[in-house]
Image (tube, rainbow, N blue to C red; front, side, top):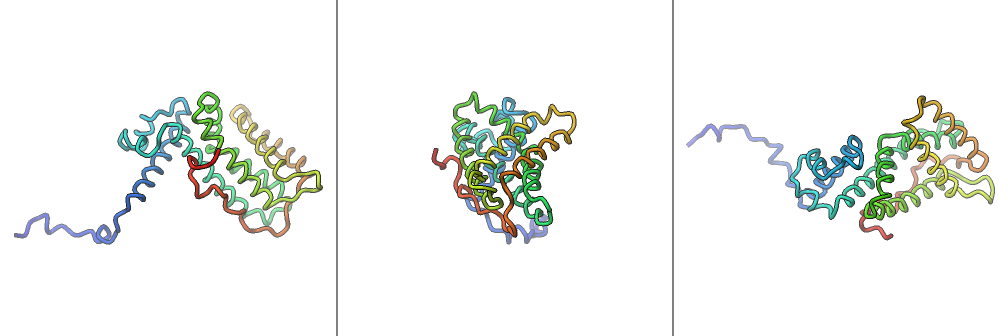
Length: 237
């Protein structure tokens, strides 16, 4: 018997599309929860980011976060890790356009400010860093992430830069630059004019020019970070 239901057109795209594996579905849910967490952190801040709001933003069941993350701190830390990976990729893309610059050291530092420390993503990380002062579990998670970022930044810096003398250390100077830019980012919302901050970033560039210079003809991206294929909860302390 021919029915109206049997006469409906068949969606061949659906028939041809393979079903996702359990691992793929699990990873998709993790990503969905992480992106919802980042959205909440951006709009609500750490104190206002509750599991309920994350669930609402992700449009999932209340049990989904518990199934994929052992605690709220673990979910927050995974979101921070996701942010750091995203920032690293964005910075790498920006660095590819440095070849034509006459002052590559200044361009490197200014690009770091604009593409990393002056962004919404960094503002979210700052929110988490401040919150970790009163959250021991979050602090432990972020400590692992901080050490990975420390090593990643050092490796990237040595890929692009050389010291001017034996007394200068590329890693140490760029870590110091990171801390300085992060401190400036904390005050960004208080400064009435963005050009004021950029002026002082350029002052710091001139200071660094007395200690570092860029390697010639380096057009390749920095090495792939060692932590890239390791989840934060599996990193050693």
